[in-house]
Amino acid sequence: SEDYVGAYFKYFIDLNKESNADTIQNLPDLQYHHYLNTFFEDHFLYSLDYRGSNFYREERKNAVLNELSLPLDLQFPLFDEYLTLTLSENLYASYISFYGSDDLVATQGYSSGTYGRDFQTIELNTNLAKAFDDFTHTVSFTASYLHPGTDKRTGFYEDYQSQFEADKANNIPCVEGPCEYDTITEKIEEAALEFSQYIFTSEGDEKLYHRLRQPLVYEKGYEKYGELENELRYYFSKELNYYNNTFYNHQRNVISKTQNSLGYNDTVFVFNLSHLYEDKLINNVRTNTRYLTTDARYNHSSRWHYFAGYAYDIENSKTKNRNLGFLYSKRCWSTELKYVENIRPTLDASGVTSSIKDRVLYLTLNLRPLGGMQVDYKTSDNE
Image 1: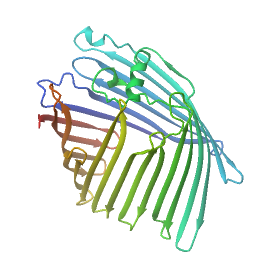
Image 2: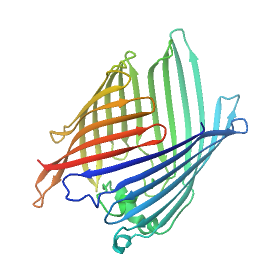
Image 3: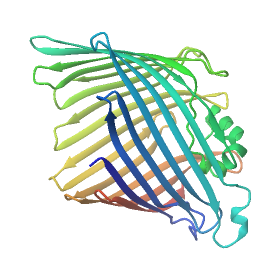
Image 4: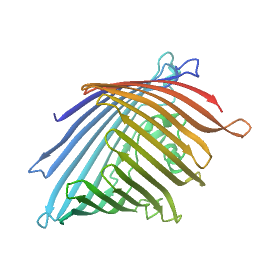
């Protein structure tokens, strides 16, 4: 089939509240996807995505968001297909409206809004491959340029544009308010140089993957050199692999993020041990993050799967997350029950650091290919 249609329902219950009337629910989330199609001997490619979301709660503001995305590509092979030139036009539009339930106050303050934009990309790519006696080596070089094009905002998107941009620039997380409905990902003018390579064994299994990417930013207000990214994955065997993803910040002369993972997968047992380090500026204050996480999964059969996970905050010497659950799957449907404990830091009224433990029970039902629904039960305690 060239089309996919899905409907998802997510209902959240916070057991600490006497009422969940102000908790946002996704009832429903509708999705439509038209898979990639080609015309003119595969020179013209396009796909289409639509998403409709109803953010509902009994009190305060509710919203209906409709989003439409249409990427269009033109591809031209050059120099006997040693190079490929791709010209892309990307169209995006959204419309958000707000409504109340019991009183008119819920609709005041936010006006309906429309947002439309287009952006263009130019990409020049080459893929080379050479087979040896024991392995095959492929390399790829890509140079790309993104032009933000134009955008048009009205209503809600125009009223809160400066607030959203300032929050993102300072890495300020959203707690509540207008930012609850900010779904726009900004596009900036930039070029990028990228190199990637693969090594495959004689049996066709991946042995090594390596990628380097350097953005060059031309947008005003941004540093010229974006963060250098280095990504690596190496398989010691079919089951055991190592993964690294590192970002280097030229302006601050620091490694801003690095993740190292060791994974094992023999189809019955799946295990992953990961370490994450981040060095960020939040409101111009340097903040370090260090996490150690583990995930394990046992596939008892094609239908029954059991899993567990644990995350430890090294920087603050505290457990960050624990989870445990199981999944039961059949051909056209599956259900998952998952228990999660999440510990998050807070400041009390006197400025003393403490933490809150959230206990959440997730119940998920997926009906393939129709969609699914999820119900969450939540309670919180001070630690």
